[in-house]
Image (cartoon, rainbow, N blue to C red):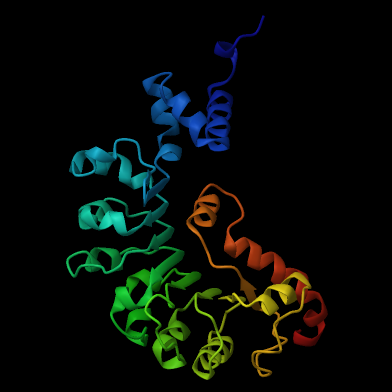
Length: 286
């Protein structure tokens, strides 16, 4: 009779890894079986680091101030979300120990000057930040040329409505210089002339832009989204009809977490909507 011990090591490894990927809870259970299995699935256990309200996803975060603990585990981090509660952590030490982050969300009310330099050295593919707290002013060309933006494809400028900011093209023009940017999100109700300028210029000047997500909360817009109207003509005629523009409900922590686990986040939802719309436009744009 064949037992697990008779199976090839590579197959056992693949089964364990698949099981761990299917559920973080399952991964935690498997990690207790043996030190060998723990080492095998450690990259999965530490792949996502969340510090948001009462949710702390890293086992042993109490040891995060220990450089040796961070050096061993931080290298596995790929998805990191830092909420306001993380402001009391030594972010410089944590971030410098997580050089392989690909999806980074920094939802902090204010980033200290001592933490900003280490954050700017990261090279994520996806980034969500509070623009006003991060750069303390407009997003400019010089910012787009920092290492943080070299590999960036998805940029969410979050919290634009927290301080009733006046969003214009001048305040976000740096997005046109992000070399690989394909997805842009502006979390602000786009119902002013300056906002329309930001939308129109983003569509015109971001060379590779495939998706522009707007957080529109009007009941009319919600109805039109349900009815698959490409973009509400009630806003501005000059940007209506562009299949790349998607209006969705405001992004949430739950959506980000779902995406970090391989589920459908706001980017995936927007991609599906744009893909469905593009049929009628492909021939015209080709």
